[in-house]
Amino acid sequence: MNYYNIYFYSRVSTVGQNSNRQLENFKQLDGFSTENLFVDKIQGNIPFLKRPEASKLFDEITNYSKQSKITVVVDSVDRLGRSLLDILNTIKLFSENCINLKCLKEGFETLIDHQKINPTAMLVLSVMGSIAEMERNRIKERTSEGIAIAKSLGKYKGRKLGTSLSDDAILEKYPLMIKKISKGLAIREVAKIFNCSTATVQKVKKVMKVKSLF
Image (cartoon, rainbow, N blue to C red; front, top):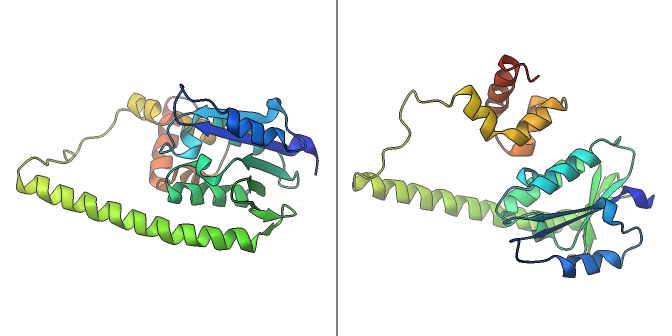
């Protein structure tokens, strides 16, 4: 493996925290370089590709061809996020782009020889996926219960029918999506990245054309 194809991603939750422990673990690996290090100081509940440094990392590693054998190293899989569903979506996106993820704490890599899916990693991720599905269902249930209670108390009004965001508001709301569209990514691929509908991506792309941004 060429060392310049190894990237390192670190995340701490707040500006007051530091990533020294994670960096020390990275430094134990051959090929470590601060030039290929990306550090976010942001809450873990922010989706991976909506983080400033993570977005820069993904832009850089997807500029390579799929034969370039890219590996992204994280200290532990939870550095990708707190939401198991978001973690799984990120790993799936990496795999689709032939990007290997190496998790030091868990001791696995997602791809074997940067080509084949690692069955051991998939076993771990399948368990995580089951837990994520349970988590998502619980959130839906709590949300539905909360709305029902609010409605019974006359406190829930929801979004007014017919309301919509202005073109400028849409551009302000989806800056990272705009960058991905500008790179020429397909609508379905962008939708996967941001875990949204293709209709949302099409709406943003339409506004970009109106504003001569695409």
